[in-house]
Image (cartoon, rainbow, N blue to C red; front, side, top):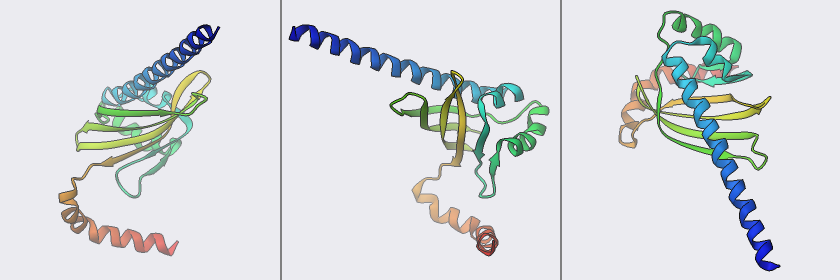
Length: 165
């Protein structure tokens, strides 16, 4: 009897692991297709992979794009036939217990060189959709002092404006 229970438990946990692996594959596929849609300037395919209330945080401190505004900003790039080209070179995916919410981080090969993307996907009507994405430029620690000096003036002006609001 104990061997039967142990066998059933092992089969259950093996199946659970397989489900998570399949879910992770689905998420990898959505993110890769999303990046490819941008590289191929496929506006519809790109935004179909985001939730209606999706958010895109860009590399500039002022870029906090809600879906509608991000569509408007992006449309001219897609219309010209060249949006942006990001290729994931490393990605980590994490899932909640219900397997309907995922968060991830990825290193990207881009026209800005190495960047980091991170975000949240949720299951909407049986499809994984990007609800939140954050893009940042990866800066080696030994270059941070140079970078801070480079952006000091603009950051100071923006901080002053933000603190007044």
